[in-house]
Length: 154
Length: 291
Figure 1 (tube, each protein chain N blue to C red):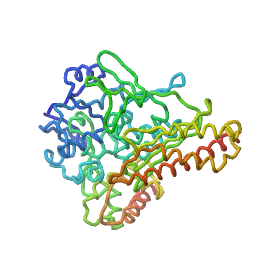
Figure 2: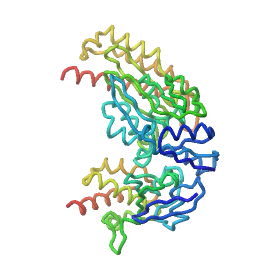
Figure 3: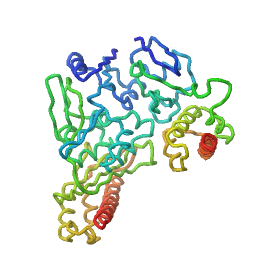
């Protein structure tokens, strides 16, 4: 079936099998591989993106359900040469090791900072609870969110 | 496989009547997992995420109606007058899951571990079902009849749940391996109904359906009466009565051994949750009573 979605401000369409997830449509049909495919059951958060402004796991959205809606992926955060402040902070804090979980965590962290510009430790932990990282032990990720918060709202 | 994309409830019910095997999908947090893992291949999916009738809630004449399509995030942010429901909603999955998952999904999936279900059971909620011919309401215990088993008809959709609003403290708590992304090993909702001087205790994840601990409820209501605690919130409840209540809640469980926990652990967890929930409720009463 033909699904038309607005992705990062651009109207895109793809001819997909009706049971296809939004994640698979983005990665396999539209070439947007920033959202990672890992657990396919909403456990790991690696495919986090915004659907009509809400943070969701793209693997749990049926592509057809996103038809006509507004999708923003990690690729939208740094459209030019300059990184988003959250991305900069991840680099600076050493919050990236293998990097697989990073796009999902960046999106979830950016989502948190939109809603709460000065989150405390507990708020950060709860907001990122749906994103798994098997390398860092999380502390540097939490450091990165705090650095980004300071930069964005000095 | 087809995807049916109705814009209104009327359209959705016509489609469901014409294609009874169509599987409703709202937030997708259960259905998409089954599709992604090739566990289920329904002949059609019925997208009910855009139906305005399912996405609303209202309070009217002492009753609350909660549409099946209301997400857990919206409950946490907007239904703050129902603390137990908010607490349960906040334990669902992660922010990403709560932004998509709905109460209707908990009802439709009918897992004994569905976090919202013990709260609906303690609220004595009714489930509102609808088909092209009209609506019917069922008490929660007649709706869910076994693990992942409901009496929903092939031409029906879940419109929502409704309950009489009860005045009194209440809470939801659950036991699991971490705070987020966890399927309950045991969960409990306790409510005190100040008006009728009754107690309600519902248990999740410790039986084939959600269980009410009726014997424990009646015991505690009597114990509070005998202690004079219904009249004066500052009156202490005898520790022996609290222990007896917790033990009876544990006895109401009908747990099994599975990957998440043993039956004995679950029974014990129910008693612990009961004792804690009661102490929170009694504290809340003291605070509101002396305000």
